[in-house]
Length: 116
Image 1 (cartoon, one colour):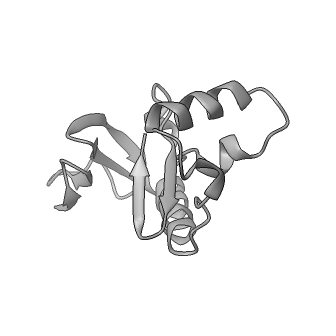
Image 2 (cartoon, one colour):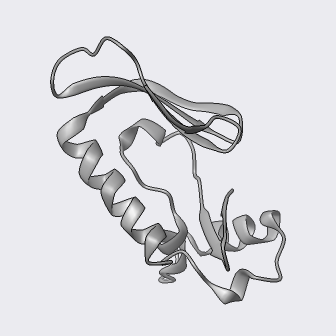
């Protein structure tokens, strides 16, 4: 089962799962396979629901970034990563441990959602 568009953002659950709590899942972002690891469903689903709710409430909206390029947004947040700024975590995509090797930021401006 696949949800989304691999060229944008998609989650693909493999047909055979390892157990009722551990599922094989592919996560695509911008046409790139970001993760193809097993996820622990009792942890993954609540984090995914939290992320979905954040998007629907536009919690990743930040007018400060409206006029900046994607690279400028990314670099600004990376500079603030170890400071007391809360913007880093406001925009950080956190679903679970399967994407630790990537830092993905989410930006909402008007009706557009961008992943960098």
